Image 1 (cartoon, rainbow, N blue to C red):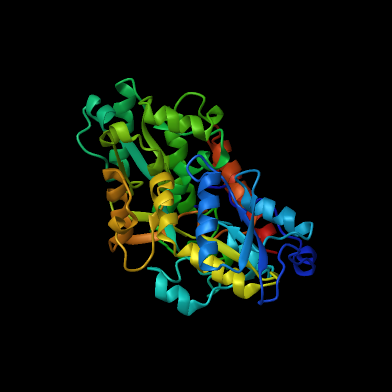
Image 2: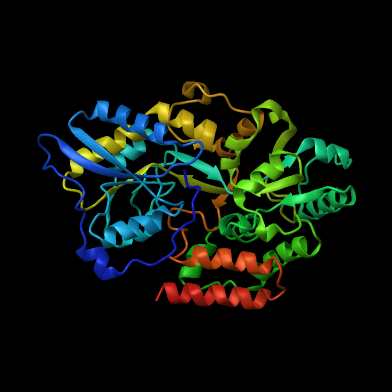
Length: 423
């Protein structure tokens, strides 16, 4: 549900505080009309949204919901455009809540309801409040691999340490196989190797790193961050990504990997929805290896819809949002098509009547097991989310570092961008 580019531009405080939703009508009695910002993908189609809205309306029959479809993957930016024109939606699907909540635009959910229905009630809480129900989760990224190409290069098992990972890349390259698909033409996709490495090496050793960065106690230019970024430069300099990787779009990178052109793909677990069912057993996954082989799960708790604090009928908006968020039928599409890991209490995969691959089940086991989970770097929706605008700066650095040795310069830019965003 969070397959999108995070926040791009800052909200102007005056706009945020003076604007209100002009979208809804109603006063808690009679029939109310609400607007609902959604998005469409090949797996979450217009039909999916129309059906899910109709099902929720059956549980809240005195509500009429008008669907608004974001014109791009950046729902945050579009929501801000609507806010600026006085049309902030009553309900917003899969946005990044931190910026909007800070501007007073979102209404928190009742914590008792959240506690009663979800496995990690505080999984995406922001300053102690839940603005998006923690309905699902992702691992960002996993390292997916083609078992046939591994066998062809005489690689018997997936690597556990970073040294073993580099050996695997070298063996694949020597065997004439491109080791890693990148899809660097889309900024979020270009950043995936760095997301994995920073989550494993930096957050794995200090889970509070992002909070400490807000406090000014740590910086991107610190030695441990430089060492992690140097690993990515080594991968690029050694030719472990495909030729012209910065020109490959995300959609094409999925096709390249699933068709066997490359051996590995560092991508969010939403890729599980794209694993070909006709040869799904050819694929498996592991997590970004650490120096000592310890397991670090880069985890992100996502969710369904946020509720506008300016809606004219907060009671009915909340009832609709709660009904949608608890509908098992919605989860089936999210699990099968978007690789989402469900986080409803008291349910197993069988309860959702889903057809999933073995690699999905193995990946989901990371979620259900007790292990070291950290907020996936740059993908958190909780207090570990980066300031508005930093994701764009991080993506730009990821693309620049693919072909530049100026690690110090790029990390200094990130520190400057962070300090500017948090003034």
